[in-house]
Amino acid sequence: MLLQNKQVAVIGGGMGGLTLARLLQMKNITVKVYERDSSREIRVQGSPLDLHEDSGLKAIIEADLLNEFYANVRPNASKARIVTKDFELRFDEHAYQKKEHQKLSTVINSLDDISKTKPEIDRFELRNILLDSLLPQTMVWDSQFDFMEKEKEGWKLHFKNGSTAYADLVIAADGANSKIRTYISNEKAIYSGITLMEGTIYNAKENAPNLFEFSKGGKVLAFGNEQTLMYGTKGDGSLMFLLSSKLSENWILEGSLDFKNNEAVYEWFKKIYKDWSVEWHELLQAKELFFTPRPQYYFPLNQTWETQNNVTMIGDAAHRMPPFAGKGANLAMLDALELAEFLTNDHFTDRKAAISHFEKRMIERASLATKDTLENSDQLHSKEALEKLVAIFKRRHKD
Image (tube, rainbow, N blue to C red; front, side, top):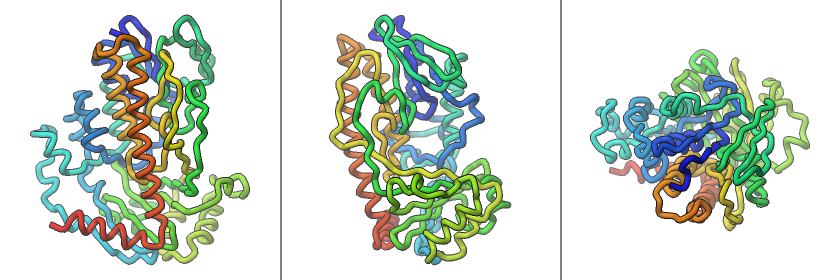
């Protein structure tokens, strides 16, 4: 086996990194996951995930975690209500598929049963499922990667807390701003022309009661003036929203907006979304509200790099892209599945050949996914966005 008696280091404890660690441990590979968070409770998780049958769900099945996953899905989380900027309801998915989730249970009869429901799960629930599946001492918390240097046939890793570790193989799963990527590729990310303003409201039932109730436990998608406003609730009672607009790449640096000053962000919102209904202002006036600006970048569709035998990357570190196709976490988990398979199936004579085969497949599918998400981004920020999306949803539920 290519990794027999080898030390594997996964940098980053997101969905891709944890899935990879689980799959490698199932093949008796020695692996550590180095995560910058100090504990599993620290990270603020993003929006719920819709796992796809050909990627994320496939990885969950191979990781033998399908029952745990299914026990934690949120039936209404995937259902959408589409509205205008003036808060006019144009489509309500809750009116369809009334029998869709009547058979929810912790026992799965078939993959077809679960794939039909298009299940969504809160990120923190999925992360906990993956964390709980790992062997004790797999996670090395409070380990933010600093730099690494070649040692023997592998790498000596240095972390900002002053600790070090050796690994024969390093796998970057450290996200869109990966520091390990620079050891593999010089390709730079390209600005998509879109910036998201992410907001999180805790205790949303109390702090944003009208919009919390309006969501019906699912998501709300609003369009107007070539802008979007999307939000959804989570199982912990919080609400996450995204404001998406065409802004210059450097508007954050060029401006003086203090994202920790909620009143200043509210004033910015009223200026940028000036023609939107006051119904939306509840989001920006809520208590226990936190903001994060997220300019959207992607890597070139034709990116490539020279394969190495002791370092590679998966997920956003390898193929950063905007979220408008819902493929980020799914691709990361599929990357983990394929990399674990190629490194442990004995089909390759050496580790570099296995990694090379994996990277070529990963780059090819990531290029297609990036193309899709950029096309979706254009449509979602077009003048016809609302009409197009309503038509898509109506076709989906025609029967």
